[in-house]
Each structure stands twice: as structure tokens, then as C-alpha cells.
Image 1 (cartoon, helix red, strand yellow):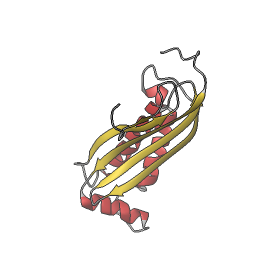
Image 2 (cartoon, rainbow, N blue to C red):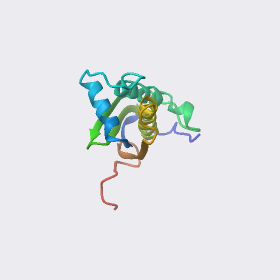
Image 3 (cartoon, helix red, strand yellow):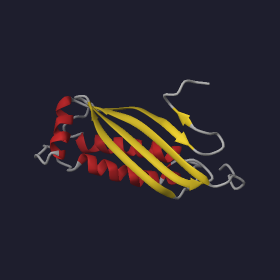
Image 4 (tube, helix red, strand yellow):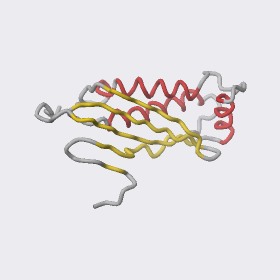
Length: 153
């Protein structure tokens, strides 16, 4: 594990994103659930469970990723937003005040939330695809800020 004891504690933020692609009928079932309709999805509240899974995974990242520092998370937000007729955008924003960043926590949250969507919906759509998981931005620390959509220096 990298020794970060000499680094100052600073506020750190990381945001990650990913996509779960699915049949339009599957996304319609998820949307129907959110509107209070009977959805035909046997495992229950897809988006709620995916949020909880993402939060739990972010909090346990150091147990899942070798050599990753355990960090006290001061804030964590996960959003799952329909994109078009056949995809969910999964976004996680994680905050801490620590000596190292929370990029891995944000990425782990997105991956776990996306995997949970798959698990919750696989009874009706085994062809779902989890794609494009990436760090969208980060702030804080010695390496400075990063935005995935920013032009390269």
C-alpha cells in the first residue's frame, strides 16, 4: 500500500459514471415501478436497491480492491437516470476529507449499482450490458483536478 502519511488531509471529490443497456421493455418496467405500477420485476425496487448496493460497495472498497486505503466517506450520492428508451445512466459522487482520493470508491459504487440493476432485472432481460464505467471527474489532492470531458493538456 502506498504510504500517504506525509500528505495533508484535503477535501476530495470523485464522480464516476456507467451505463446499463437493456431492452426498452425492461426500462419501461423500471419506469413503471417508479410510477407505482405493478412492474413484473420479481425482486422489487430496482433503483432503490441499486442505490443501496452502490453505497454499501463504496463503503467497503478497501475490502474489495487490493491495496486500496480505507477512507472515511463524508458524502455519497448515487443517481440512476433513464437515458432514451433502453439505458440507465448510473452516477456516483463521493466526498471525503483524507490524504488520498475517492476515485476507486466512486467507480466501485457505479459498478455495484449497475450489477444490482442487472441482478434485479435478469429474470426478464439476460441480454443487458454494463458499459462505459469511467471516472468523470475528481477534485483535490496533489495531482489537481480532472474532468473526463476536458481536452488533454
